[in-house]
Structures are given as C-alpha cells and as structure tokens.
Length: 307
Ligand SMILES: *[C@@H]1O[C@H](CO)[C@@H](O)[C@H](O)[C@H]1NC(C)=O
Ligand SMILES: *[C@@H]1O[C@H](CO)[C@@H](O)[C@H](O)[C@H]1NC(C)=O
Image (cartoon, rainbow, N blue to C red; front, side, top):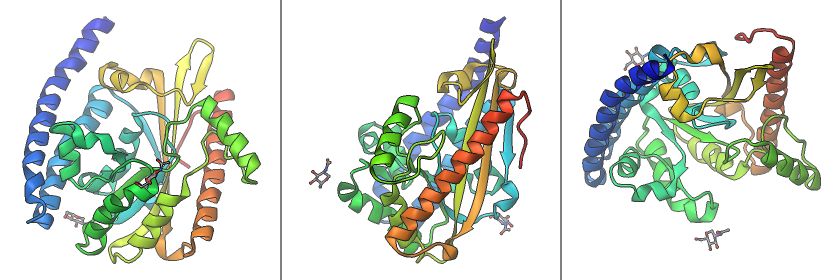
C-alpha cells in the first residue's frame, strides 16, 4: 500500500522535475543577458521561478496533503516587498514560507540566501544566480560584493522582493543549541528557547541598505514549527525530510506544520547597528516563547491553531 502510494507521488514528481530542469536551462540562458537587460531578466526569472515553486507547493499541499496551519497572515500586505527572517528547522521550511508568499502574491519574488558553492552547479546553480539570489559564504567581508549586487537591484532598480534569510545561518539541532547556550552565557545574552542565537550582521546590513528602497516597507518575522506523531505521542520539531515531503502521500496524518508571521514596519525599527542587534535578539526570545507554547500544547494533547 505505502509503496503504491509512494509510486503515485513519484509519478507527480516526473513532470515537476522536467519543469524544473527546463526552467533552469532557460534561467541559465538569461544569465549572460542579465548585465544588458537587468529589469527584463528579473521579471522573466520571477515568472519562471513562480511556476516551478507553485508546482512543488501543490505537490506538498494538494498531492501529499500537508495541512499547514498559517497564523498571522492578516499581517501580510499584498505585493509588499519585505525582509523576511525565520528560524530554521529543516529543508522543508521553504514550503511554509512559500505558503505565506503565495498568500501575499510574492511567490515569484522570493529570493533566498543560498550557498555560494551553488554557482558552480550547472543549470540549477546558474539558474539561482540568474534570478538574483544572494549566493553567500557567510563570511561577511567576503560576501560584501555579492550583497551589493542584491541591494543594488532592490534600491536602484526598485525590484519587488521578499529577501529571505534563515537568521541562525544553520539548521537547529540540540547539540548546536547547547553550543549557542554556552556562547550566550559567555557574552551576557539571553538564550532563546528552541532556536539558536540569531546572526545580526547580515540582518543589520539588509535593514540599513534596503530602508533606502521606497518599495521596501517591512520586516516579516516568521516562526516555523513541526510535530510528528509517534508511538508515545507527538514529538516537537520533528519535520519530514525533503524526500518524505515529496513521497509520503498523507503528510497530514503524520505531521503538523505551523507557520506564524509578524509584520514590523521598517521605519519603526531602530537605526544603529547595536540597537538593531538588540531588536533582533528580542524577536528571537519572543519566538522561543511562542515555540514553547506550541510544545506545551503538544504535551497536553491540545491542537495547534492560528493565534
Ligand atoms: C498585486 O499584484 C497583482 C498582480 O500584478 C494585481 O492584480 C493586484 O491588484 C495587486 N494588489 C494590490 C493590493 O496592489
Ligand atoms: C573572510 O574573507 C576575508 C576576505 O576575503 C578573508 O581575508 C578572511 O580570512 C575570511 N575569514 C574567514 C573566517 O574565513
């Protein structure tokens, strides 16, 4: 039975993978054109990306029936550009952020911080590069040029964008949390629950540079949570793997998916680097408290709902 259903999901994947491959070939041919026709290439790549992302989102929510609990989406403004920050649990986090982007009409305008090494992956990596994804090493001085390229598109060319980063720079694990805890204690910081300590440098640069762009109005602060049904009850922050998200046909029977978003007008954020770092820390402490409420609901056998 499971095998038959997995085959059914795989069957849905074949057209999507073909679509993905074609899209990346087209995007790669846009790459040499992007220096000459930057606005055209940004718009074209946004439409192409949207079709691919819409496809995989539908495999996740319709074919495999993931039931995403969306909280706070009344805070989103349609077509609004934003800096999007989020905690990071698993690869599958992108579905939850895409669900928000879809509701805000910004799916095609999503640009994610990705690993620099992808530039060397033929087609797939070139495609991301052509779309104007920030491909970074996470060494801030080495990334300056790449960030300037992205900021220039938003500030000078006024491209609409959701610039998305997982602010902890890495996925959450218990071991990394213990490290973060030790670091926070040594540096006199509060330890956010269920997350790692957020990296401030990139966030500060985004806020300070993008505040100059007239279309860039807000910071969206996203909280992501999962639960998996086990023999001993629900397990907190146990997401499916990427492969499971594509191949398990009834995701709603085994997992809970939760995403919450808060909107903060960019003009209300502090200006100085120190205050922005503090502001970000406050958001993460808040996020930890929100996640703890969800965990306690699981322990008490209560459902999760939009707050
Ligand atoms: C958002 O953009 C779409 C597509 O361009 C347009 O149809 C819609 O009216 C826009 N909505 C708002 C609130 O500007
Ligand atoms: C970061 O990049 C700069 C400039 O490329 C380099 O000098 C420095 O050694 C790098 N730092 C780390 C930690 O890799």
